[in-house]
Image (cartoon, rainbow, N blue to C red; front, side, top):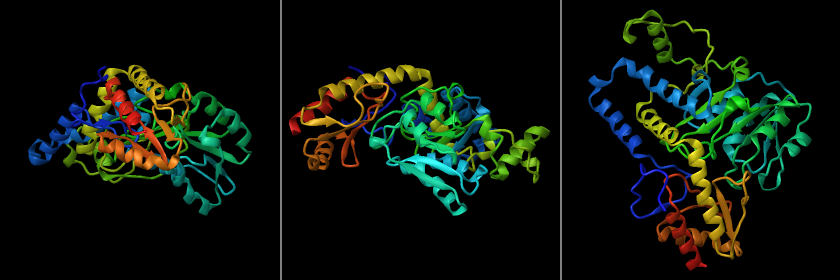
Length: 384
């Protein structure tokens, strides 16, 4: 009845079943945050090498997480950053069309909207409960469709899409396939090099258990060779010049833009970001040490236990069976009006969940145990 990892908490007697909103920091990440604070408390310890080492270590960890070469990883601060990079950096033309799913999380849709001023249409397709399939995409992609942007797991519906089938449907029709991985990666494994995906954008503060304002984008070679989004930051240029010339960081001045061949050209500024990125690296490395397949198995057992034990008056709204089932369980009382009160009453009993689109959303992760699930179910049975 134990959690998969003992590196989280204590939760002060509460059950945090809202990872789809915020993932907690493991112990190692909290130590890293304190170390980052100490570096600023005693700046003499803040050596030049750290400005390169901190982003390099995080980039390597995220490369392992996605099975991608580190040079294809851009360090960002959100899902939106990655999609804005694609929206502003690719050669869209008037008459082009970008397809998104109605009901998807705004971060998947909003970054494309400014392109409408340039004559690009952002078309939302109506999919019941956002249960996107390859067949739906095949019917919806038109000769004008240049890209499809979709979520791996949908925040308000809890369903996971078939990445292989959906990506293939896009590529067979010469459309790019962009993926929001924020509600899946960390609870599910992925190998981006073996899937028909062109780019993935993901935040770091949900299932990857990092601080807020962390994220990354994986950019395929196909995208990197087409991307034109000048985003020069002086420190990156100085670091590159110092490395090329084997001199100290503060002994070289560089004003010329290097020829860009890697995703780090599109990093968020100040990519060392000691407090956030040192901390997040520890979280990602902890997940990697446990293994994503093992985490996924644990999380799915928790979901199965939760779905099987819900009271009869509370119906599951998200998919009940894999592979469409994710780690987000959305459910509703037969009297939907009771859901807000149920969420408040659970919180009063020390159980933290989310209310999304009028539904109860439960999202357990590796720090939760079967005993946590049983406590949630006991409270629900008493309340209804």
